Image 1 (cartoon, helix red, strand yellow):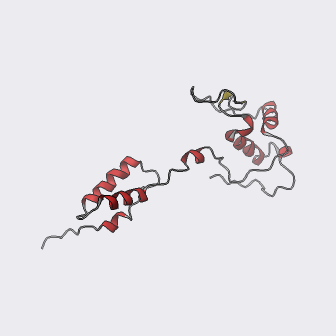
Image 2 (tube, rainbow, N blue to C red):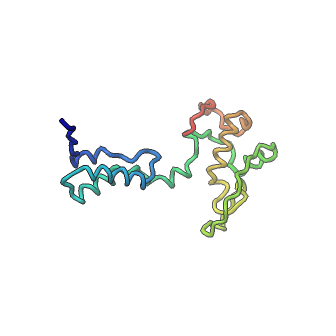
Image 3 (spheres, rainbow, N blue to C red):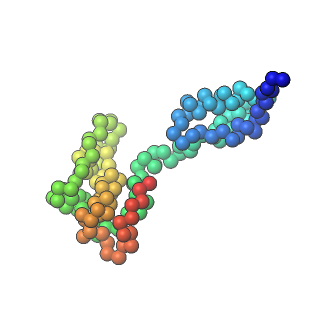
Length: 156
């Protein structure tokens, strides 16, 4: 008696999901192999199952620019002022310069990056660097008194 290969139903496709670090191309190949094992398929149902299984990428750009901490210590000064102190103390770890990008806003300059594109006051990497220095005890004077943060590490 040979083994009988059971065909999968269209409902099986709704259980297929793109893995966290799986490229769309790899997901498409894997999905295609599953579709090949289903007899009666409708293009509309297959497309719906495929798109429902895709990882949400809608916030990818927004998440890229979010800070690495879930909670930031309220500060007594602004980031520009604190950057000056950090530089004076020799604690500044300036990021390496980005490659040239014609779309950068040349009217905005970031002292932390030493480059154009955004303002120092809105620099997420500087905000993370300042938070890290506060949590390491280097900038306690800039932490607003009464903050209950207590140096918890809550990187995302």
